[in-house]
Image 1: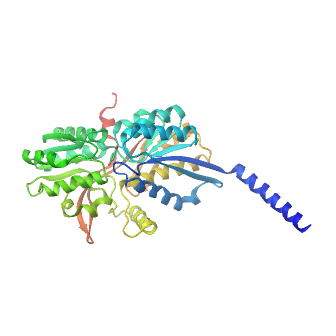
Image 2: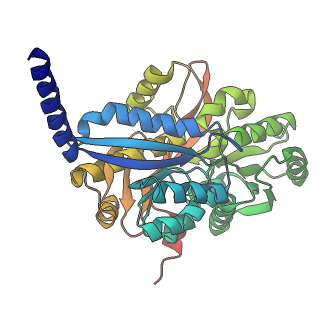
Image 3: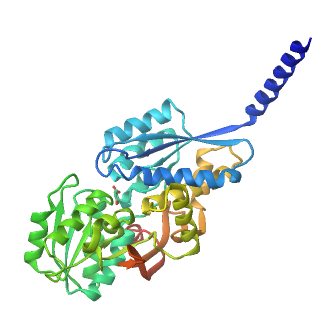
Length: 397
Ligand code: PHB
């Protein structure tokens, strides 16, 4: 008798739980980033931000709503692999959203799939301007290279007589070069020369030597953040470019926060324009960095890829809350176009409803020693709410 009532109780409980789970909603997010290949150490900077956000904000989800993250490694700039992963996530795993992606070629390969399947795609890094025009289901929470390199060119034209440019030979490099050269010329500055280097494993030394021989006052570099940025800094230092009177400048990718401890003296005094620095003293950033260190260790630091992923998650939570856990793709996109956060770690941000691209501050920073460690110190705000200049300049009249 006893056993029987226990069984009945268990069955009733099971039923109750079963009924409960019928209302429970699991949102599946296909999260694609790089854990191997070129700069494969960057993936965890994105995933850690996603997981930290989820841990802090579980209570902000509607009752019964759960999030499942399906993590995939696209193996670096590899559009075929990225496309295959996105296809599987959409067709087999039936994800509600796609998110992540460091490299432009991968984002471009995924764009048509997002359109075809109507799966909103939250870009957390890839920064070539054109990406958001390739699918109405894309919204970007990172940056464009035009956003940093155009104001950089405007500023540098006043400060340096002649600048040389060196960029990785792919989308974001071309954008940065175009933006910097255009802004420099518009401001009456001179471009001494421009060189494009292979994306994967270039030998920077001969390119640096060529620049040194041209004797410019500044060298503007874009290469992807991570180990590529470290290699540039090492070559710049080894060739004594600084002593030869060449100032290193660029978008913040070249002094990415996580590599500063490895860059050493060569990075001191490097001037960059970017939207995010781990050293920023805004309360929202101090809280973000403190939470990061508490979760991952005192010597760990977030970088701009972490900031993009954090803000992308904030937008995802917002669309989930607004739809009470039942995501509808077109409604999700309408909501993303209205997204605003006055208090992101990088400052006030919003999505431009016309372009689905982020609007954000751009800061001039200098690498300085702060409390014994190198830091990207924000010294001036060049623009408080910068829209992608490429889209602004190419607007149909
Ligand atoms: C890109 O592929 O769009 C990309 C990669 C690394 C960066 C910036 C942009 O640091």
